[in-house]
Image (tube, rainbow, N blue to C red):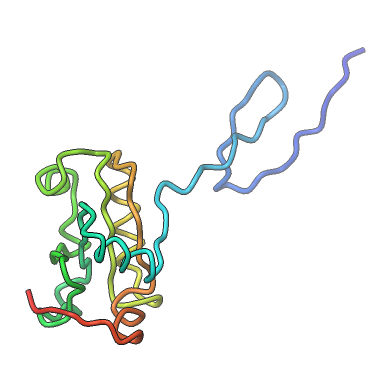
Length: 142
C-alpha cells in the first residue's frame, strides 16, 4: 500500500518545484531594493557621501527646476542595462532613485530595474519630491 501526501494548492504567482509526488513551495523572493526616508537621504547629502541620486520622473511629469540637490534626471522609461552600466559601472555603488511622491510608481519601477540588473545597493525614496519640498527642503534646476 502506498501512502500519498496531499498537495497544498498554491497561487500561480508562487514559485513551485516538483519533487517526486509532492509539490514544494519555493522560498519567497526577497525584495531586491530597500527604501530610504527623507532624514536618511538628507544625512547622505549633508555628509557628502558618494552615491548616485536619480530623479526618475518621466518626460511628461519632469520639471527641470524641481530636483533634489545632487541629482540627475534619468527617466524611468530610459533605464536599461546599458544606460545603467554607463552611469554606474560598479554594481555595488549606492543608487537612490526618487520621483514625485508616494502616488508615483517611477522610483519603485526604477529600483526594481536596477536590482534586476544586479545592482546591490539600490534605494527608493518613495516620499519623493512631495515629501522633500513638504519638509521645506530646497530643490534645484538642472
